[in-house]
Image 1 (cartoon, rainbow, N blue to C red):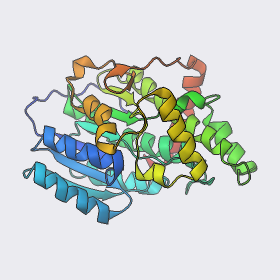
Image 2: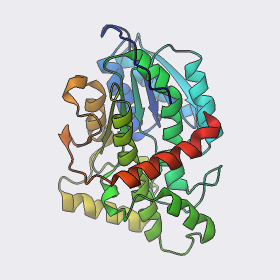
Image 3: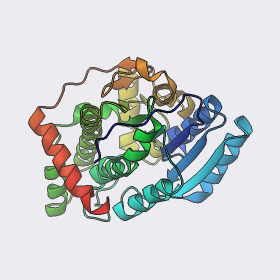
Image 4: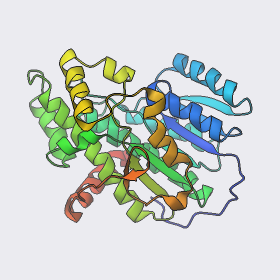
Length: 305
């Protein structure tokens, strides 16, 4: 990654915003909210399917008629697809002001990505890491105020360790077809811990861009609806225990929209925020683990840069 200084631009420039998973749930709600906040913006909806993106684009145009919305096909579980999506944006823009790394998959089935990585780590972490790596020059070109908002989850607390290497190797060697889903939840939690750890490391290495991770809380989305009955019950129980219960996508998106629109000087670079705008205390991973995650991630995406 290039570590040169970013250029300066005025705050009145139209915003260029990239949202992964912007076709439903939190991503769609965020896209509409950001269009309302920045009505002259250009919004890239990076997702797998075009048809729901058209519906979101139509909703955006009702709240911000001057906004430009473009769909970019991307499967985060395939690094070839991620690279092509990033190249598409690189070929059209001179800067990107906001990247909202929102897309993700919840615990359901055990599998691997197109390149053979454990599915949750590969999709939730590696795919976004490649996208951010390739878009970094455009973020730097945006100057002051450029930011990356990575959506994570309170589930990171269930992670036993931040060990993407062990996670992927275990899935390749053993598989998790008959584990009643418990190990899938651990893999999901590890991917969310990796997101938080990698975000903090990006902030350390590139302090002139703001990187934060955010949790939306417990949100009733299509992703939750597709969980098994047992997983849905566990999710609702956790939401009740934490307090407040489940909320809808519009309310759930409030934290990530806040992070994407608040004056960047109010954000603590590398921090994780819980709803809404409160720093969440996260035990920092030891430097050796952070370096291990960074090196492993760089190795995973190197071929596609």
